Length: 253
Image (cartoon, rainbow, N blue to C red; front, side):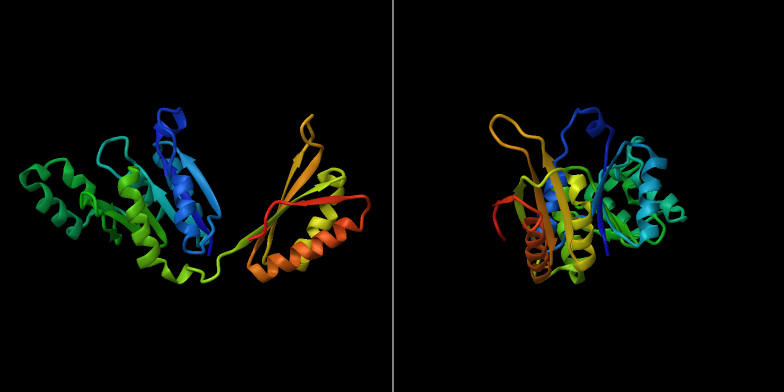
């Protein structure tokens, strides 16, 4: 099951604010042996947000979403989620009770809007101000404020997605190859490696050279330890057999 991240907010796309969620989510997942498979930034556009949610739902992905669940007119993530799941927006009784306890008479007429979720949604507890996030299917929605979003995501990962935790997280072997030619000369070898070791991922990053460092390609082979280790050994042996090639290790997990 792939895990993706949706980060919502016009302020991020305009540069008014810098995103902090992507590196933190990678950290939270990594601590549990989980890898982030994809990430998407979207503005405060209901149709665009709904398209990302609908696509994740169609693939059966787990979606973690940060931002856009407030009650102001520019917050459209709740409505987008309802559209993506083809259900109406409905006032959630438990979320409403939390807001009424928190704010009393001041809960009306606006704060109660934050209890309006897609019909059938469950709640994600908010330890900072008690205003819940929500989930529907395998899609989880929290506020854009990091101080709220991150502990709420930890709850999701531990209470809802514990089955995805890996006792042994993926590892990555990285090294540089000098004298190997261009990436195009090694596509056959890279494809053969992926075919021989389906659990792994192989990445290549070419460097054209500079006065400080000669031309090379940096490789990363990632996956379960046994597979990644075997694939790295297999790839390197065949790479070295191609000619006058030098390999520089960048560290082993």
